[in-house]
Amino acid sequence: MTNTTLYTSECFIVEGGKALRGSVKISGSKNASLPILIASLLTQEECSIKRVPKLLDVETTVQLLTHLGAGVERQGDMVKVDPSLVCRQEAPDEIVRKMRASVLVMGPLLARFGKAFVSMPGGCAIGVRSIDQHLKVFERAGASIRVRHGYLDMELKEIKPVEYTFEVITVTGTENALMLLSKCSKRSVLRNIALEPEVMDLIDVLRKMGAEIDVDGRTAVIKGSDYLRGFEHEVIPDRIEAGTFMVGAFITSGDVLLEGVIPEHLGSVIEKLRESGARVEIISRDKIRVSGDGKPKPLSISTSEYPGFPTDMQAQFMVLCSIADGISEITENIFENRFQHVPELQRMGADIHIKGRTAIIRGVKKLQGAKVFSTDLRASASLVLAGLIAEGTTKVMDIHHLDRGYENLEEKLRKLGAVIERRPHREEN
Image 1 (tube, rainbow, N blue to C red):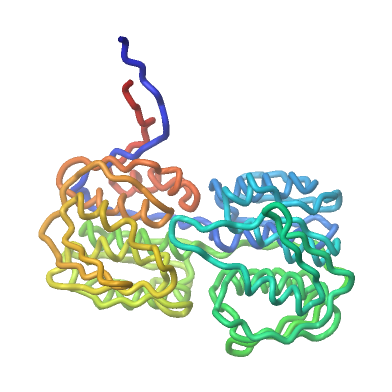
Image 2: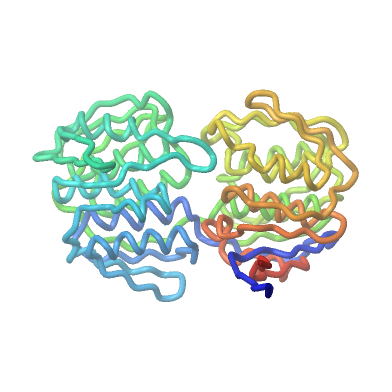
C-alpha cells in the first residue's frame, strides 16, 4: 500500500524563546465591523466603512450581504456596500452555522422589509448563547415569530415603540434591538444594555444614519426614523488583538509599541498587566508601550461585561498565569464552556486545575513545545502565545479558528522578532 498525503488544514509552527520587540499597527475591530456592515441593510444608500480587517468572519458577512442582494466592494481596508438592490430576507443555515453573528440581520431585515427568515443558531465551541432576548424585543415591537424547519419566520407590519429591560446583558441582543428600533419614529427605551466599545461604535453609525440615541448608564433612549441615510465610518481598533499583543510583549520579556489603539478601551487589561508586573505606558491617545521581564506575578481574574475584564482575554491571561511565580485564579462568568484551551496548555506543561467555573493555575518555570489543537478563536491565540515562550517547537493545529479574528497575525509577530510559520498540515495515509 502506498502512502498518500492529505492537506487537511493549516497550522502554525512556532519556535519559542524570542522576545517581541518593535511596533505593531492594530487592525480594525472584528466585533465592531460585523454589526456595522450589517447595519447597511437599514438604508438604500451606499455605505463606506474604513478599517475593516481581512478576516474569515468578515468574508462570511460579505457573503451573507451578497446573498441578500447587496453589492459589496473592497478597496484595501475600505468596504463599500450598496444595499439598494437587497431583495431577499433569508439568512440560510449554511451561513449562520459558519458565524453566529449572522443573526444580527434579523433586526435590519424586519425593520426594512417587515420580514425575516433566519436559520436558528446552534451552540458554539465556547457555549450555548440563547437569542431569546432578541426575540422578546422583536415581539414587543409587534413581530410575530414562528419556528419552521429550523428557521425563525418573522413578520412585522409596523414597528411599535418598545420599553424593555434585558434580563441579561447581551451584546448582540442590544445591537439587534438598536438596529430595529432605529427605524421606529416613536420613542423607545432599552434598559440593561451592553456598553462594549463595539456596541458604542454601532450607535455612532446609527446616529450618522439619522437615529437619535441617548445613552445614560445602561439605559438607551432611541427615536428612530422611517428614512435612514447611508454613512461613512472608520471602525474602532480591535481591543482584543491589542490585548493579545500586550500579553505577548510582557511574557516574552519584550518591548512593543502598539499603534492605532484606544487606551480607554483597554482599562481592565492594562490594570491586570500592571498588577502582574508589566510596564505599561500610555504614550499618546492612540499609542501604548508594553515591556517587562517575562516573570509575571500571580493574578486573580474574574471575567465580566464591559468595563470589566473581557472574556475574550481570559485564555491569553491564562498563558501569562501559567508561568507566574505563584498560584493564580481565573473565574469565567460569561460562557460556561470556555476552558477548552486548558487541556492543550496542560500538554505544554502548564499546571491547571478546573473547579466549576474557576481555573486554578500554579505557575511553572517553563512551558514545553508540543502539538496542540485550537478549539475556538481566543484559545488559538493563547496557544500561539504559549508557543512563543515554550522551550522548543510548538505546532498549533486548526488555525482557521484564529483566522476568524486576527488579521495577518503571523506577519505581525514575525516583524516583532517571533519565529512563526504557517504551513499546510499533512496527514499520512
